[in-house]
Length: 314
Image 1 (cartoon, rainbow, N blue to C red):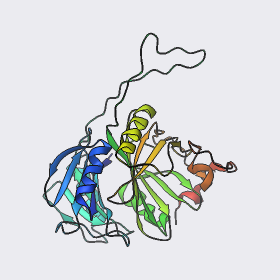
Image 2: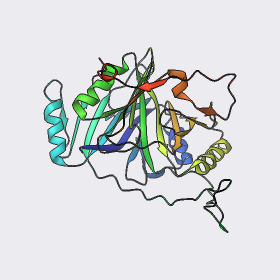
Image 3: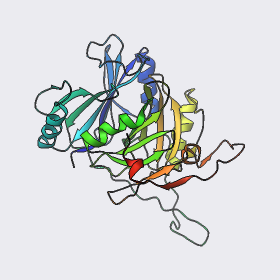
Image 4: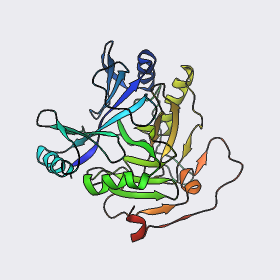
């Protein structure tokens, strides 16, 4: 099983105070704060770490921007798995250990990656029954009311590269990730071997290297919109509003993050196992199914099962 999901991400920010307040408002739990940075923890035990640009322990910048996520730490299920992965990685790049349960290196795109032995806490979500014409699942009972969002886990993270297929190949061949889906002229969606989310990592095609967004999983659309309303009252508004992707089926709501990129509230993503057959999607067709902001036209349907050539990546 080896890698089971995202353990932590590390931001570099030029406005630590504003970044800390943003993540508090977003609904993350602050566990430590001082002049050097702030640490937040989600319900599954994963962490979001904010560090000022003067911090001495910051990993190197990924891309041209000094702000944004500089490092992703992936949870690994055991020391045996960690050492097996580390032994292979050390064949062709420098690797450093922190104790016996953590190691760090650069991936093929130049992003700092850390592996840490850690058991992400299981999340237990209550079912909120949904009524529909001809189907009554909730009788004499109100739906759950949310005052704001409280993200439970980091479901995926997105980086861009001029060569996303080459960047994705490292994770498939060296870290055991699976290809979930491919977006024509867009990028590659990857799932960690010990996770069922549609994707935990997306390498997106762009002219530059950089960080795009991290997805925070919440219970349902009601919680997304409670979080959206709370953030709007703090002066933070989405550039797209509520929408749903065709690829992964995820409901999304992106918010500009003062630390770099976007923070995404997300829910109801597809879940996959090794029986899933990857698709190849037209970029516009796969990206968005619908948006609260009505688009002038809809893209033509373009989706097919991936073949062996598609899955070679390079």
